[in-house]
Length: 89
Length: 89
Image (cartoon, rainbow over the protein chains, first blue to last red):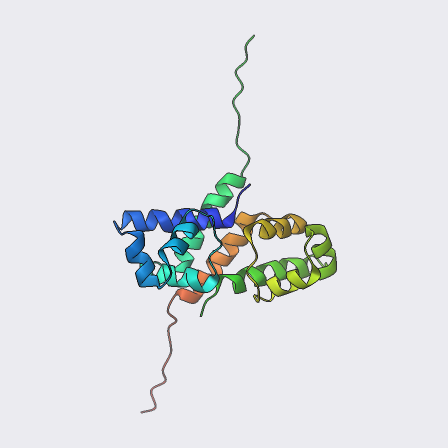
């Protein structure tokens, strides 16, 4: 099942890792606990809208950017894939 | 403050109203309580990822579609607006 929190978490984590920052650093900057941020990144917890904004601010990215990325990922997963079936005959 | 739940709620509500459907109808189809759906639509409650999927299914729209719309709305709000200042001189 496609879950919004999974894709938001992946996007936030990818941004943090690309910035070479630690969970501790971003959690401190966003004023959330390290455990909370870790759970959000792993898609185990729904981030509240307020804390999602705080995390985006800590990562210096816009919410719109995260959502556009997530929308694109979700849309790609929702599109039925073509399956190539080899003809054995 | 731009809140994700506000924009998700607005998008879901606009779709339901455009379809001429009632809260009761969509809530029943999504197997959520009418009060829950109403709060989500008004941006007063964060929809869990699972229930967001159920509401999208009930409205026969894709999650990707909702997210693309929300991403676009949020990005537009995040873009600094030009302010026209009349010169009084």
